Length: 516
Image (cartoon, rainbow, N blue to C red; front, side, top):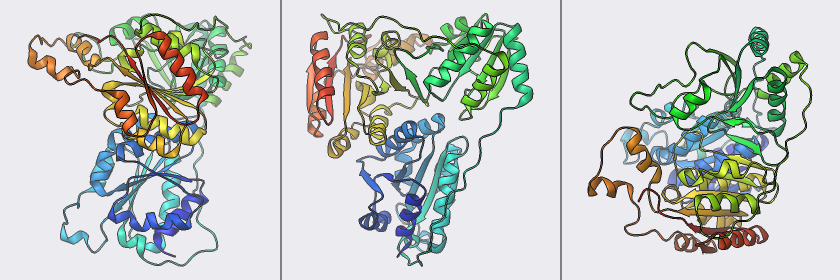
């Protein structure tokens, strides 16, 4: 037995049984060890950003870490943007990064780099394993660290000789010692109860929000005439018919400031203090009005459920009936952002997981999906685009059910290699590629930041219609059956067909060009 086999055995012993991989020479002993590790599912990804995003999606749905396998510092760098999104989602993730053999590092070979400096900004856990007989223990420590709490990115660097050197097989593999979540502070809880009874208060929820969490929060709100607000980009949230619906904090700072202007107290429950996504001239960065009080009841990634149950008990908050509404109707006519949202809502089967990277094309989705079939919704927690397809891939591996990815054309081009892995693994993923042929959000932001751009040079920086991207052809080239929808009826038909057909399907939805 060698170090690589010990690493895999330890991962499996700690219920880490999926590895999204983009390996290189330094990781060949790990790859070979997969043949003797049937408990580990290796999933090949054609780009490291797909592997890291898939591990994020897997964790959001399962609550457990997947592993990634990355090739030295450049591999980690290629996967970094989606690791940033995972960091902001507070999910557990175990990065295995191969490196040159310990004795080879002194020669500064072309791929030599400072891996620790690349991992440090992820604000997670880092270790470089230096001895094969310690690799199993290092691996268990990485799994434990990934769970936190809160969940975080744990990066374990494994030099090639640490993988290939022989080790003795132990009677049992080391287990990760997981830390307990922090208890809700009694003083902060008592203060929260007092202000809920006496002030205009908003509960600001964040992270992973189940229908049970949302029901508890609405009981608190109804008992105290307070408001339930959800952060703009939660990790994963239950939505749809029968699920209590919070307000969503507006993405636009000006609107968010107006949304919170009358609040006297904000109680943070699994969320940070809300701030503007970007800075804008003459617009405040902090969104909570002065002199409103902020109570940090539960840190991001903390125990949201226990805190909400404690508030319900302290306030003797009564149970509530779930709100009901009209089932969405399938649209007809032109394909617009409104009819796109209606088509998604009208056709969605119960239990689907949605990875939303629709960006400006999805402006009407939240309202349309209010009474759609119950589903789970994942959002872009860290703002680094190119998350949607990889996260959908990982979610499909974790759930073994249908996933719907709503993907804008510009963002799709960052990580379209995820489509190939969806096809290879036969995953039940429906992808709607939204073709508006522009970086529409940037055209919108151009005026908001006060930039004046009226010439052809600046226009070409934001336009992706020369040449026109053929999204359906790109998906077909990666092995995913593809269709194009140019009106609402075609989109409805394609969605219904995709849900009834095993495996992945790509639908290019051709929308009017935005800001063109």
